[in-house]
Length: 256
Image 1 (tube, helix red, strand yellow):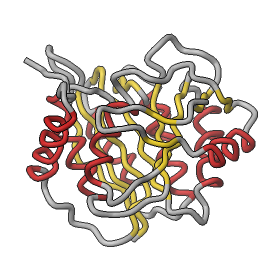
Image 2 (cartoon, one colour):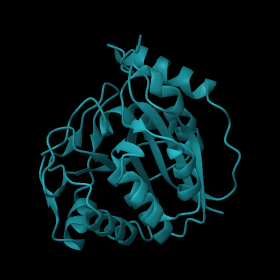
Image 3 (cartoon, rainbow, N blue to C red):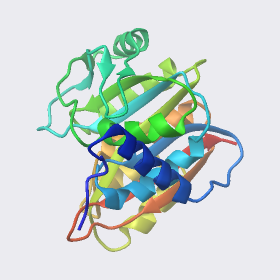
Image 4 (cartoon, helix red, strand yellow):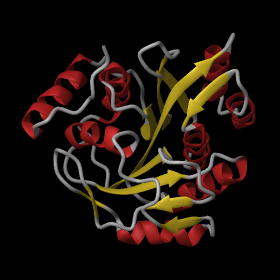
């Protein structure tokens, strides 16, 4: 039976995350980590995949995390950045970077300050506790929700993130889950993602061959990371859904 990743008390949650990170394999890569994709779900059966990705940045310092997730409400035709001052987690409040979120909104007319689509158990809330334990020191966050996964929005947000991350010690983290797969869908995703083939990814994720919650966040991550000089991409975990829940996606992108 699947369990929620979050324990009821902060000390228990921290121990849980520390155990997950300790059990995750040590990453084998050289270069500067630019972006991660982690499971969107807050279920414990996806936590090992998330920890395997977050191990790539364990002990590192970032000034800000740009966090991209799908809307967990109904779709809405905009991309939103939370207007709150902080983002709550059981491990404490994370400061939202006001200057950088305004800079991001200035980059594109389809990005707005709005809390619509934010503050669910999935997405940003699922990734933050892992980052709070893994990263060294405090960091700020810019939480972004995509109310629509259309290709135009993907290109707009990918370009905007690439611009605002320039010259900053910034990490991009997106979340996504596998909802359904047919045939060679998983193998095709791995091949396209590791080749930075965004055209193939758009075609694949826009079909029934591989249905992904947060597929827009996946495309955005590939585009923004490429803009920031990433030349290496690795699919760390990729599983099909089961009767108990969605499949997991975990990826890392870096400049080698």
